[in-house]
Image: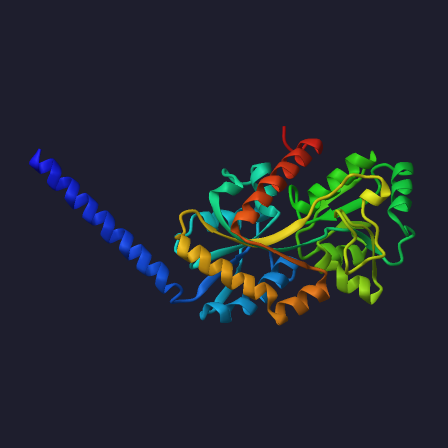
Length: 320
């Protein structure tokens, strides 16, 4: 009995020491550079906005934030790396709707709940776009052509199971069309459209906005609840009779088990970074809508979006 009591005392002492050590580390956080994992390749909207946010936020943390591109498997490579990282706040992930598409389609053997979700930074539309010299001036024009020519229109996306692929699949099914879906990767969508490899792309707005403003591309429809303030003349799918609403959100997630003190520090820093003039300027230029949600609101939002994504994948036959 005495030995058991001694064991309990020793065990509790170790737990208290360990807890105090972790607490001390959290209070001192951060003391070194922070790795900022980006789920897609260089040059795409995820990379542009992520790097800008990292640069805007580092001064609020007092340490460098180092962007690292980890593309592949529709975001699955990055999310796997993030999940397997030490939960100490020195590896953060620039998440997006891909945290829901990659997990729902089975690219990874876990769900979005495998992480601590720090905050949502904002969202952007994933419009349907064509070249400026295309004969299709509206989505109805495209729809009419597709009905008369089933299987002839090629629609580019970031990859099978990606948010852009899912949006295009839902468009196809809701409108009763037959198109060819072409997985191009994030960096190739716009060049492939402009070069004639595909006739249509579904693409995050920041990636196509410069081409639209330069007069080389045209947006036909926005899959958002309301018209995007950057392009107020472009109608939504809902305005054109199709209940298609999918937002491409972007936010910050970290490995499960990250100390609460660290989560609070990161949430506060990225909130300030999202309001920094440098980030706001790039966001406005690229059609990214800053709409910050803290940890509690972001978790609630993720649960709602996860259901939408799961239902959409079933509608498109991507999962059983």
